[in-house]
Length: 270
Image (cartoon, rainbow, N blue to C red; front, side):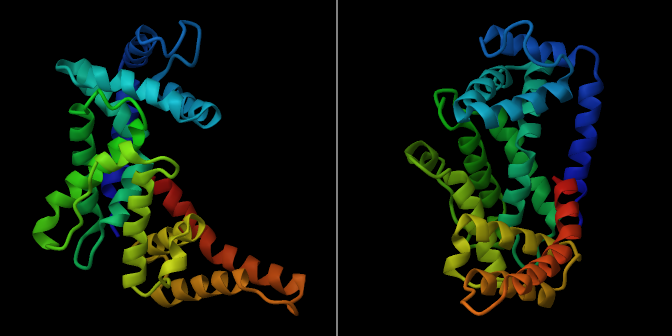
């Protein structure tokens, strides 16, 4: 599997961060929007985006809604500033873009080609984001990207699902965009015979399906080995009395050893 699109995106991001004044411009927009105080957070752009992500995890979705909303308001304009604001948002959504790409894979589709469609769709969504959507901003971005990319790829998949961005507004508990991506990934993993159906839709099992699909697509796992790992994990979850703790630990260690190099490549690609 060719993952040049995301490696290239990260390489481009390093150049964006190296541009003089880039961090100061982004900080200025966030300060004007009341998201940051003048003494708050790192000055350099790369560190600032990482710091915002850490704070999102601590404070919650409302924080990401505020800073993403502030940058999207700038991205809706014209000129270099608008392009920079959109580029920051795109970089913040790279993990979601990788997951979206996996969810849109079909037989005969190249990962890198689908990834290019997804990244282009994400950038377009960031530039034209409806600013009245002030809640669940990341979910709206990802869901609309799914919608646009799926529509773009319909030529080779007449049955492609039309994603509806209004779902994100109606969601109450689970992140609908994440659920939509997960559904696509699991559907592909099931179609490839890597996992079995309904139970794999649970979030934890869906993450396993995503990792196995990635490993097979990247050539790091054979389909047979991926099925073996999925079977082992499933068997462990259904373990009955009579199996010793030592035997369970040994089985888990073998599974982890097989997945470790796949997970390392997965993280690097994202």
